[in-house]
Length: 336
Image 1: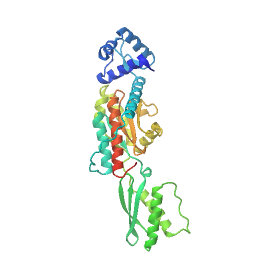
Image 2: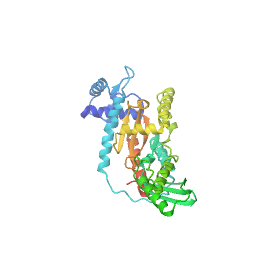
Image 3: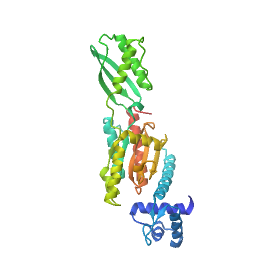
Image 4: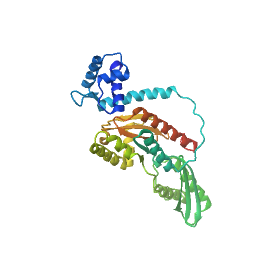
């Protein structure tokens, strides 16, 4: 859709987002200073209603956007935001490096910032452990039969764990096992069990790889802002809002499943995306999801909110914080 009708639809959605009440033709003329008459606007609104973009809750009321109308507005605004982002590719001003908190705290703070900046539910999905390259591995015997295995990921996360090794493992075999373990962690994939005839270093590296794989993983999703979302949805009704929040909570509770759903929705695309009334995920049919990727597309962050959320604010916050998080990870030895 283009031209006058598209502009009027965008104005109706914009006005509804700011007022949360049906929009009349007279209001469109006054607020957006149209040269068109209210009668002409009414004809266009009627056509948009026939096409499924608007609906009249009552015979004498103004129009309210449908999911289709919100979806059109969100995608139109996203196109504008992407054009503006390309037009203003200016060198970033150097900023002093902040003291980097632990990774989990950094991701939790990012989710909180997303919620605070948008007034919606903010979330950050960290990259899966198997998707984060390992930068360094150190293996050192500390006593007969035990060694300290230290790994440093590309996210700057260091882990240390005592692991079993043969009591009589020689220094040469220890160094060989360390090198083989580092090579496997830097290029994860299908690892076949070693053959019986292969040396102890190979068998030790394989056992250590399995030991490290059993280490507890980080939380699969960081979420902040449930009260804000409940308050925002409560504009419609408390019962309806509570049901939407319950559904979304169940979706987020299975963090890995939600992350997999995001991968399906984003279809490998990087950058900013918006999903309005997503029918492929039942919990999102009456909600909006704005997401962006970071860490070279391995992680995703975003906000979840009602169909009538402030799209401009959500786009700006999500894009900025994805860029900022990526920048922090780069500055502290993360992804490029």
